[in-house]
Image 1 (tube, rainbow, N blue to C red):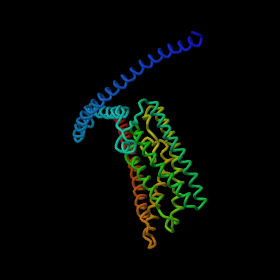
Image 2: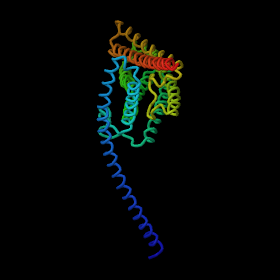
Image 3: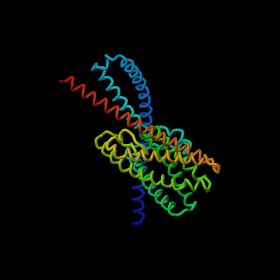
Image 4: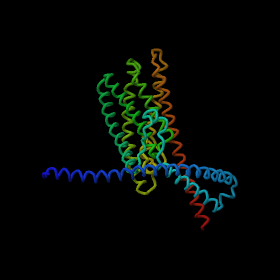
Length: 346
């Protein structure tokens, strides 16, 4: 055998050793996946059992709260506090477990599992989601400015398609985030679907007098909402960063198109801009309603868009106002409890 044959033999021996290591690691990986699935099933059974017990204890607390004498009982107050803490801890544990895709993702993606199995991957995906929103909003602003400058329906169509694609993509991305532990829920989740429908209607709205009369108002609205998106992104990111640093927020919380309780810091800065946006939505609804009343109006898109804008205005206003009310009520209760505790100690 020459030197080349010896070299090939050495490489072959080395390959066999590396292949044996690979097979060993692969067996460990398969066992790890099996153990992980087993532990997940055990956790889900235990969560179900604990939820039943917490529910029973919560019912007991509600009945006892009707008896005002128990509200001053220190043991009872400690029980209430501990139960609430357990509920929050259970929610955190449940968020950290792999979950089923849900009906919407099953329709869109089929049975493909979108669970990210480690916190680093989840956090990276969350950051990509935030960057995606920021980048696409920049394109939306650019396209809108071109559309404002040049009156050409083809450019308008590009903008409308971009908006549909953007909001439709957000519904999918947010569904994946929810599977991986994000707490997007309620109205802010539904808003993406409604906005997708609204943008889709604009695509099929035929060119004409009615479209021309609403066009500049709609483009102004798109510019304002994009500005609001940039404003919310930088403001909410700052608030989330501070709360995470203090250990008060979950890593998978994301910026949303509205206001929730954790945004309380710097409230006076963001809220006026949000409510101006809500008033703009109502104004869009009113303008479209007035257009629908005219004799020359024969497009179904006008009354439907008017109704959708009104629903968006109503949902945003009620949800934000209710969140503020809840936060204020909680803050007032905490201040009263502190004052009473201070009074009793004196």
